[in-house]
View 1 (cartoon, rainbow, N blue to C red):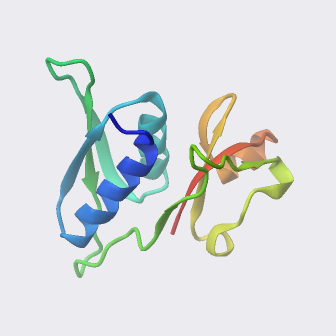
View 2: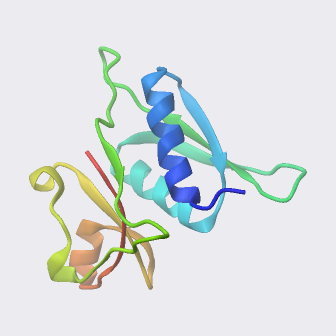
Length: 132
């Protein structure tokens, strides 16, 4: 069992991008699916599917995205909040990743949202990760 499924997901994505894989499988959870949805909406991945397995937990199959010359779309993906040290931000404290070119993913009371959606809805939450 993994202590931090979000960190496991981000590490698997990072490793798959380094190995030039087209897709990666991670354990499914509501938060991981929310992160995958945010990455897909922002154009960092091609898409994701929830795959039902015959065992206890489903899988998320994430299809990675590459540029026209084979370069990765995700240059850096960093976990901000950890189980040992939670990072909470109000709407005014949300970071601007690369001056707005990247995205911060936040877990809020209204689900997993990007920093732009949080500013629009005027809510803060736990800062999960940043992507650029």
